[in-house]
Image 1 (cartoon, rainbow, N blue to C red):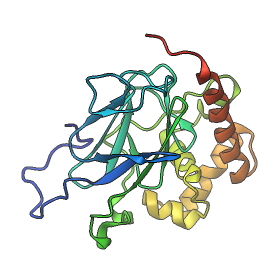
Image 2 (image 1 turned 180 degrees about the vertical axis):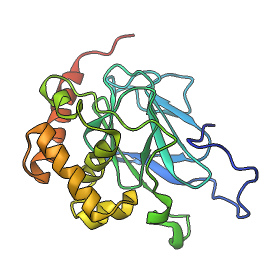
Image 3 (image 1 turned 60 degrees about the vertical axis):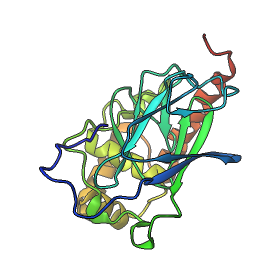
Length: 229
């Protein structure tokens, strides 16, 4: 099991639920797997903890790992998969843990998965409080690695600017809301967003999100090729 920050000397006084979130396959709601503090590998291999149906040939045998830390924060890490792992259309670099939240759409090759709340968890923790969302100072930041032109959109972005892109792709468009999630002032978010526009040559939040999503759609269309053994 891996945490993205040093372990505390003692565990929290309260008992954590066994499951922190549920992973489902889009259009196949009967397939459900629990996400908890045990780091689990997702893939088509026979020896992985979260095995996806073999018909999803674009998914590598050991595609990504997913887990929750002791504060119930959720993380995903691409394991050098053949076609990559994306969060809300932002393709991630391998071996870099990225914080995710319930409601995110995960893409492993052409497999679309939703991360949803576990209904057994009490209502007071159904939504992540802003106080539990920190800038990833102790963890490597998410790094987009999109093919062709889209990669050029992010190669000049700082980790702080890329975090804003990830939250925009989650549907957060108000500066105040993004600032609360990242513990930044709206003024700081506005400045960083301006830097993103200047570096990418894009002029609106909608256009920025659209470019990332179209980029991933283009990558997914290539995944119809037969998977390598």
